[in-house]
Each structure stands twice: as structure tokens, then as C-alpha cells.
Image (cartoon, one colour):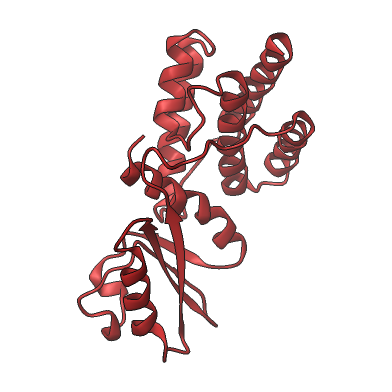
Length: 214
């Protein structure tokens, strides 16, 4: 995965946390969403809330990163209605792999999904389901999934090696599209709870596979 893809992953992983804090999040925001003081600058994402707005920027670590950081901080230093949040991505060759999650952490995540689905918290459920799917993929193939993954790559790699069946892969592609639309601001995305229940069943099967391969 290249640095651009990893920067995108950083942003997408922030979305559910910010939404839980009451923000409406826009990745790659259009110009009409930005205030006049951002003229000539478009942040990687913005998060809007009645009491506070966030500008989010992912900076690739390197010789120019400190200058970029200083320039951005100067732009926001007198703003009381906007806060700048910076995140950093290491270039290829300098990144450490993500750690595998403990079995009990994955089990707890799977259990929480059923409660979210039954209580109608479908948007939260699909985001946690994808996080759990990636954690399980990393447990099964740490060498393939050491770095953050896109849903599409997770599906294709696990389908190619037979870890998920063709019909499961089709369902996952459908849910990946819904997940992407939701993360990119389609807050009224319709997701069938029955599809999410099937997703949970796939997660449970993958969890069994991690026990077999341990």
C-alpha cells in the first residue's frame, strides 16, 4: 500500500470516532464547505459540530513536514471556531506493522456487533464489523496485512486464498460499498440488518479459523 492509500486509511479510521463525538465528517471537502480564512488551502478532511469545527490534515513525515506543520499552525493560531488536528504517516520503508489484536478483544468486538444490530445502530455496526474483519485478516495473514488495508484488498486477498467463499465475497463487496458511502458522508445510507447478521456469521467463521491456525 502506498503512502497516499495509507493517508486515506488514517482518515477513514477517524470517521467513526468523530461521528461518535457528534461531528459530521467530510473527506476531501468541497470549497463551499470551507470558511473564507481557508482560501487557497483545502484540508484532507473537516469535522463540523455546533460548538467546534475541526480541520484534519495527514502529513507525510519527511524533510518538509516541519515546515508544513508550522505553516498550517500559523493559519489556525487565532481561530477560536476551528481547531487544527494533524496526523502523521511514515514513508514506505520506515513504517512499523500494526499489532495483532488479542483474541479476547476480537471476541468482544464480535459480541458487541449483535447488540448494535438488534438495537438498530446499523451505521455503528458496519464500521465496527469492518474493523473486526481487518483485525481477523491480520491475525490470519500478518505478513499480508501488516499495514492498514482497504476493504477491497482484504476481500480480494481472502477470496483468492479461499478464506472467504465467492458468495461471501459478493456480500462483503456490497457491504464495502455501503461502508465507503457512509464514511464519505452519505449518512442516510440504507443497510440491510440481515446482511450485517450474515457479516457477523462470516466474522465468527474467520475467528474459528484463527483458532485452527494458531
